[in-house]
Image (cartoon, rainbow, N blue to C red; front, side, top):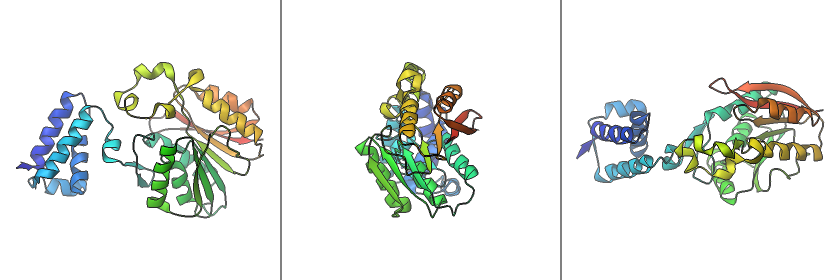
Length: 282
């Protein structure tokens, strides 16, 4: 029989050997999810013994993590904004950096009773559009993705977290979708330069969908396509918020300004890196 404390020691040692930096923290997270307990409960139950099946599950989780599979995929969930979202390897894992998009929309439109139409281009797990519509309870919106499997994940999150008629998901190309009727466009497109793949962590390159991460033309091709499409479906006053990568502020800003958009604000992520550009069609 193995106690919780002993299991945590085993997990920490095994993950440390594989170079996992937060080995104890991750071991605690795995145990908490197996036992369905909180941080406080984990402390008080450290001497409780795991059942055979619980320890086997813990070991299977460790084996997956030792192969650098992200914790979010192992547990099929990731916290974002105010909710826990279901995820699998069909979608990007929601990241705290992307929450700046929600924050900036709330700053730009502080009246949560506004009746707006939102579009989320490249919705993935649906975390952005679901979070926005839970803030703006009188608005409606749509999430667009060109992956059938991603749409399934987004629908699952909708059914679990919101399940309202104000939100739809649609299989479509986000660079050609008709955006004319929407007041606010949010978009976290693929933006990592394909040449940077060797500089990225194995957690990302071996497990997360490359089509949602990497982009041609130094990571800028999707911005160009979306902005061209917004021009084609012109709506004066329409606001667009893009997530951007490191060092892309000037390039994406120029793309917007050269296509009759007025820059409103550039927001930093939790690390102080410019991560979101907000602009308005003029």
